[in-house]
Structures are given as C-alpha cells and as structure tokens.
Image (cartoon, rainbow, N blue to C red; front, side):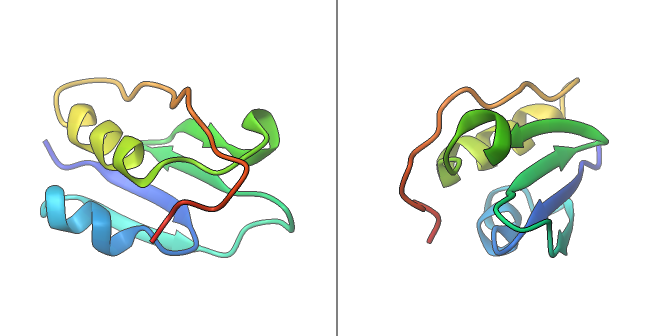
Length: 83
C-alpha cells in the first residue's frame, strides 16, 4: 500500500530510505508549528506535544501505516532531534 506523508521541514530522506514507496510532500508550516500527516491523518503536532518528534518514530509510523491506519506519535523532545 502506498503511503502519503505531508511533513514540514526535512524528513523526506529518512522516510524514503526506509519506505521507498512512500510519497512524501514537504511543506512550510505555520510559525512555531511542526505537523506530520500520514494518509490525511494528523499523527504529530508540535503545538499539541510541546516539542519535536523523534525521527525514528516518524519513520516507524510511516512503515506501520502501510498496513493500516497510522497511529499518533506519543513522544517528543524539546530539542530538535531530526537530522
């Protein structure tokens, strides 16, 4: 199943490396906002979580979404941990 991901900033390389069939669209978000949608479902919002997602969690969520509805990410870091 092809997964469509909308991310703000720069996670495309990490996602494509693990899920090559994913369609990843990067966008510029609102100021102080970092949101990730997978197949139209909001799975992460910096405004809700108070921090940034872990790159490994984002990649895992995209991978899991190939087999069903994506799950919300539950961990965040105050520091940007995205490489």
